[in-house]
Image (cartoon, rainbow, N blue to C red; front, side):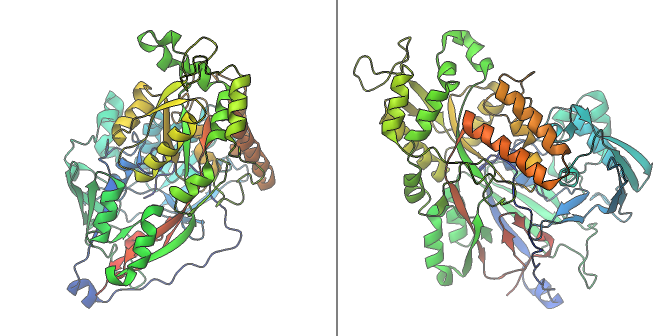
Length: 574
């Protein structure tokens, strides 16, 4: 039920780039609960998420506040094991590719019903979902478009479908995890142009028809989402018991990360991904709280500072004379900002020592594709001031704030999602560090969906601290890298590349997708990271070490930085 492309996240923005397993990892032995346990122990699992969804539509959503709610309702053709990183059958029972590498044939399961219990899942639903992806604006298009060409699909029979690629496409299996939607429910809306408005948050949850393990039965804004086991779900365990074991799920919708922590600490939720500030308290109270806390590795996500380089913003409301675009495009300004930020201080005071400086945009956990040779812009406020002075940013009136050559004071607004303590602390450090070198920063935290609206819709922002989440394939970051990408956050959805280096990024994205030789692919993505590191469309902040915490009575719960292993096999014991 994971999103397969880069999307906005409450805690992290969403980005791909994780390791290919160097040797096959061992998968855990899963327990099969006794009938007595399933009967005597209330099998209701409770978790929490921050913020309301913006939509229930998996195609049009671009933020994990939405996918956190609808994710258990839908499935893809294949899925990726978060331990071995291998691709496994799901709605497709197997697949094959011809010698050309262009024609992929997927053989679908013939025993899957939609959760209405009346309609069978068929190849028609797969074709419809692909057409929907190409039919309305969404982030998946960037990943499923190769050299400007679409992937074609042809139905062979009810349970066989072929995909015809325009060119060989290295990450094809990785991108085939998109959620399949029911043609019999949404097909007409795609034809009449109303698909984008379908399954909005005012939709009766019971009308969400999927093949996933759960049905959404109740949604109350700012309160909760409630689920019941899909009685028609097709998966079974080794003994033929129907899955999932958990009969009911509740996701509490909370205002901020601190509330999520308090809910877990009070025993109101069963598992939780603590940010660094909460880890020590949970570790020290494991016996008292009857929980387990485990370190699972350096997180795949990356927090970053990004400046708005979108001309559409500066042309609105007579903002043609707004000098900020000139600053934010000036590499001298960006380098000075990077040198001014004390990243070691961030690790100590924000990440509580649980962090690592790693300037490459692809996470160090992705030891195959991450560029280890990139050197961080070391903390040096004197050098930062020297760079600004040489570039003409001088405090001309001795008020402590620098002016550019036209006399405009270096001052901008900085935002992040309110209630995210880690990000708010990051912003406080950035604000102080920049004001120490003569740049005035107005910190204005915003509710997450308001932040997303500014970032994605009206472009009314100066600078933001946000992040990218991780995935399993560098190409899944195409909607961030490509100049036409909706998540090319500093200047999204360009009709043509605004700069030479963005044009080169576009070329590398295409080249990396088509290159089948691993060593050559590595070089391509290393070069891509070099370009980002040199041109600084975002300033990478220290990465945190990830932890998971869970109630001791949870069985079969195995979490990695890549995801949670077989959620449908989790159950509650005495």
